[in-house]
Length: 442
Ligand code: PLP
View 1 (cartoon, protein in one colour):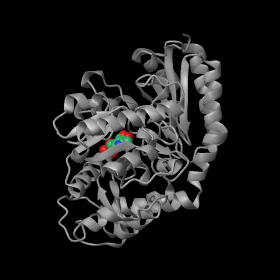
View 2 (cartoon, rainbow, N blue to C red; view 1 turned 90 degrees about the horizontal axis):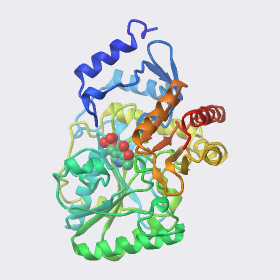
View 3 (cartoon, helix red, strand yellow; view 1 turned 60 degrees about the horizontal axis):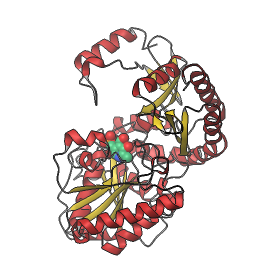
View 4 (cartoon, rainbow, N blue to C red; view 1 turned 30 degrees about the vertical axis):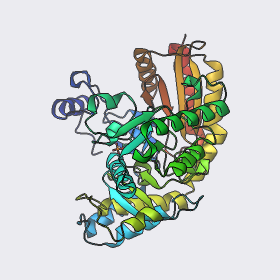
């Protein structure tokens, strides 16, 4: 056991002393220590095991340490670890081919090219740049309930509170996206929420000046903002508004792409075709950092005879490319997307609904595939969000029972790897039932 020489406490202490940690007050850190993992399981240096229903930051769609992907990375490392993007090598074109095979099919566009980045944030940067260059326009419209990453424009395109201390980029405007449980539009049905949210977006476009707007940027299903599955018709309505005003539509599939929602892309559920698709996380389950943009025919064509003013040292990094090829092949060969859909429909979806029926602290459940939110409330009638301290208590109680969830604001997001099985779902739901019975009284 290579883990043996370390203690959890020593690892935690060294890291919190020497590493500046994301989105944190450094003196308050208490990270969970992990030594290794396999499939849906993780373990620390002292033999404690965890069932990972967070997929880390909702990225390990194939689970931890998939042997085919580990081997592909090892083989590529033995052959060629790194290469400038201006050179060509076999894995880069092959990775692009695999991704383009999953590009949106339902509509007039065909997707022709991939631009590779280091992660999701810089993929959004480059999608916005392409839309601005293509349209000759400036503004980007995006949703208040969104997260698009932590770089210059991506964090300002982000709608949620992490944007506010970081607003140094210009040309961004926000609007409210649908969220029936906490409707901004006094809507009482999905259809009403959809219609009113689209009317609101039209008014924002008109008020901002349609000819100043380069793109509308939206997560197909806003993830960190709460697994906000949009009403059927919303994304199609946004597409129609974009078409009416000559605006490009960018769908951010960083969190929901590649199996998470029981489809290859989440946008596949909504019969909508954007102009640009942004991806990262699920494309290779984060085994090597990577992201990118799927580029439709018109925008690909635009750059055929024009200079593209953008690039990165590690664009199309060979280790990332090898991991994408192996990930997407393994997902197809092993039926992982279908497993995610089936688990969602038959086990996880019905399971969280049953949990909500037993525990009034759960105000609403939402989701698709292996991507579900439990929204906790301290008052179900007023829908008062559960205070952060109580959410932390629930998360810690689940962890003590060996279940790791993604906790944000007043919610748990249950997002196991796409390979999760019915027994593991049952086990996780039993833990949550116990935790809520003990700590979830109103
Ligand atoms: N877009 C979405 C929808 C995300 O969920 C995230 C990260 O959680 C990002 C973009 C940013 O990706 P990264 O952290 O890889 O830069």
